[in-house]
Image (cartoon, rainbow, N blue to C red; front, side):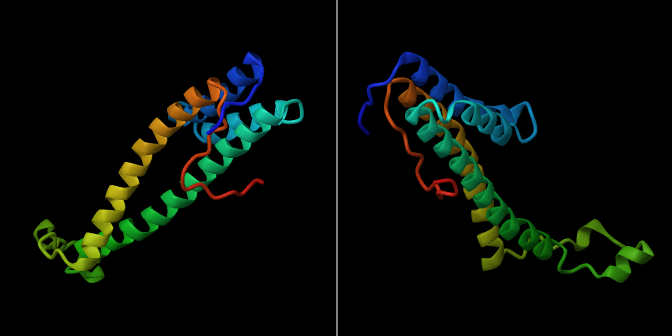
Length: 154
């Protein structure tokens, strides 16, 4: 990373674009809507703002893709392994017993699901700290690039 000579206004606005991704904790889909609105309003006026806006949006889209993949692996696998000893007839007839749930059958597939859930949790924690770190580095004038980001917007 190298520091770029840019105005304080551009640095602050770029840092604010990074921090706007944290609105997902308050506003549904705020991590996409607010950065897109902020980036779209100033992308033509500054190369530094354009660069940071693209990276914020690409990072958020990458995290969405990774989250969907990890949850698509873990949730069905866990549900299948837990309910593998229960038939649909038992559920329809009302003969379903909690004791029939098979939580003791830990197989390799269940371990994959548990690892996927662990990766999902780690990814969400890392995302939070990376957003803050990116905002700090951007405010110092550095061009920050998030790790493991797919470039959807070039």
